[in-house]
Length: 100
Image 1 (spheres, rainbow, N blue to C red):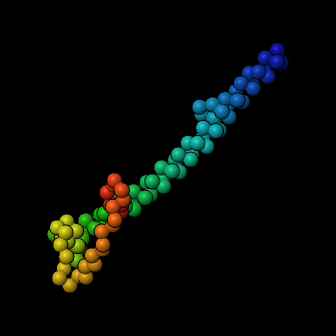
Image 2: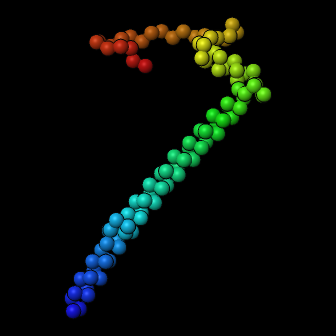
Image 3: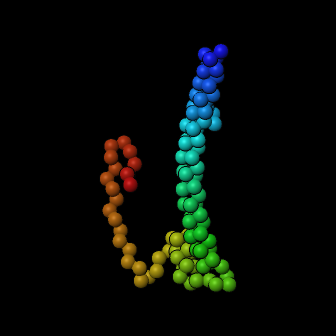
């Protein structure tokens, strides 16, 4: 009888540590939660930045500098006062396109 009780206790002790909901699994889940919270924080920061930039483009508070920046970027235009520096083309390696 004591051997049977010891086996039952050992069984439950093993699964309390290494089971699907044991201590090892709990540590692993806590690590995944920490990673997910970091990603969430990063995405929230990114969203807030996008919302701030979108607010500058709204018609009720249109920022001329932001409008000009977006127009230049989307239309590939430059201001006559801008300084444009042309870089030489990279030499193409044997059998391949130019590397960037």
